[in-house]
Amino acid sequence: MEAEPKSRRFFLSGLRLLVVALVIFYVGACVLVFAFQRKLLYLPVVRSPATVDQMARVKGMARWTNSSGQCIGMKRIYTNQPATGCVLMMYGNASSAIGCSVYADVIQQVAPLDFYVLEYPGYEDRPGAPSRESLLAAGKEALQSLGTNQPIYLVGESLGTGVASFLAGEFPEKISGLMLLSPYHRLADVAQSHYPLLPARWILQDDFWSENYLHNYHGLVGVMIDGQDEVVPATFGHRLFDGFAGPKKLWEYPHCHHVQLGESPETFWKAVTAFWLAGKNSTP
Image 1 (cartoon, one colour):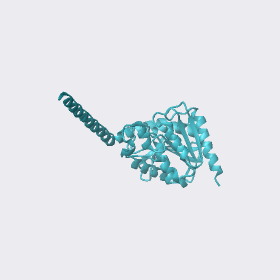
Image 2 (cartoon, helix red, strand yellow):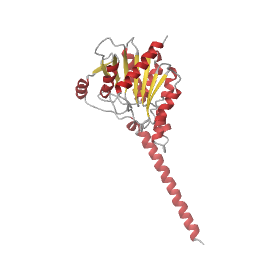
Image 3 (cartoon, helix red, strand yellow):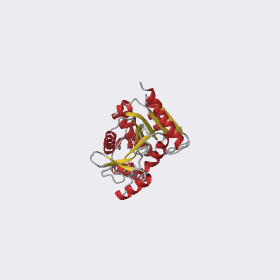
Image 4 (tube, rainbow, N blue to C red):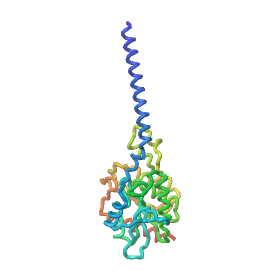
């Protein structure tokens, strides 16, 4: 008669130990993700100044400096001046300003625009460390450094769509149009989709809430969404597009992956610049 109570006690004791172990493991996983989340979120490309200069020459890019002479990114001025406007680009996670030379190639092929790319703190040879605060501050400085009376168009890629959306909402009177490539309505929801068993939405320090940023912006917004995007699932781009009440246009490629075009870059960017120009011409 005592064997059953003993075995039951043994079972319950083992079950309690298992639950405690699982709780400790879960809490430990949450602590690790919280502590190292910026290592997971930001993947900076880091090179020496000499290497950056050499690569910039090869790509036809030049350093872009602020009023203090500090490098804040890269630029390529349109060859046949005068340009009719300028593009300011914010790139995706594992890219860099030099890596955006491919965008300069095609955009300047289809439109007479100067091209600038923000370099994030901690990327390439720019001092500092990446964080939401440092990226947004760098973006504000970059936009204010343009100092042009010509139209300014923002292009955001993946992570950079949050920075672009912030700048549009912060300086709506300065921005003539946006193009967001593989965007999200809120970065915390993207993080939650990648870590469904962890409270990622609540522990993410560097949340970019693009949907809220755009509340103060009523200009042109183009959105490009890839149906097979594993990094930023299409549903988050659709939420941003559907939630924006201003003039907008959607480019969707159901069979493409992250930041991948389903047509030639020339055709795509020709349509984007035409969208910007049509909106500019229709403005009273």
